[in-house]
Image 1 (cartoon, rainbow, N blue to C red):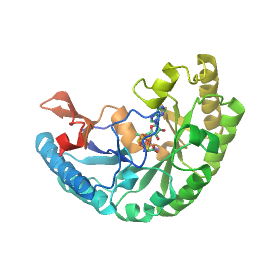
Image 2 (image 1 turned 90 degrees about the vertical axis):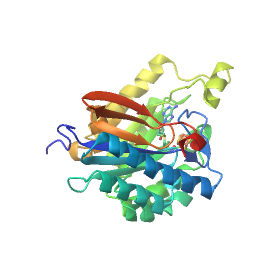
Image 3 (image 1 turned 30 degrees about the horizontal axis):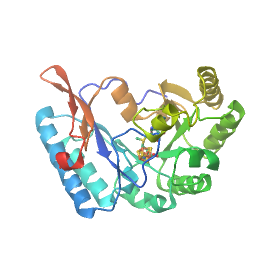
Length: 300
Ligand SMILES: C[S@@+](CC[C@H](N)C(=O)[O-])C[C@H]1O[C@@H](n2cnc3c(N)ncnc32)[C@H](O)[C@@H]1O
Ligand code: SF4
């Protein structure tokens, strides 16, 4: 099997940042806000994203589209019509060479899985599911708004709507053992994911977890235990036929690799649209970093 992205060349990927979340997780330091159902504000944000795409397309000049990635925040809360509008505009501005990978990050709640079919109808063809853990106590510790069973149900619904599924998991949680983590990872693989992104829990100082650890409320695993869990991750995934094609990304064979991740990893240009989104654009031969206003009000 050949590698899906041999060379990023002149092609361009698009990253769309949707900042709203139903609940803010205590470990997360991404650019996020609570979703308070402000429909007008969200409609204005969609318009601003479309305008930003056009403005950046004028700068970038004629390019081919390599992939689109909707990240967040929680883009599975985005109206499917808005997702469709962004996809349509991106493809009109940058004609793709054929069918391209269009990924969207989803939280595995019952409410959101009810929208998966509509998101697939909007053009999304790869779902990256933020399951984080398959253990109810761990999910409660991580402040997640779904149980392990709810996540399993969402995975089953996603499997009917999308051909390509990826799972995000967080390991190196306090008290986590190599045996427990092996069992969780093994279950995740049995659910049928072709792509796994295992992230070691990072304690960010500005988050609720950062404050809790600073005041001694709990202690993350020490370096040795974290290293053991990292090695467990690599061993379990390798045994199951997954290769680590990028730092935190493992695919079961080259076709399962994310075109978008590879494009960015290999230094391909990408546009970042949405509040706080970063981009990298080669303008008159100079690689230029772009970053959008972080605040929704300032961006729109
Ligand atoms: C930007 S989040 C969006 C995903 C989606 N909103 C969700 O929570 O499922 C992308 C991924 O980053 C990971 N992540 C975020 N903060 C982290 C942290 N402090 N330590 C480890 N992983 C983290 C989580 O696995 C999460 O799924
Ligand atoms: S982890 Fe996901 S759901 Fe939780 S606050 Fe961060 S982006 Fe939102």
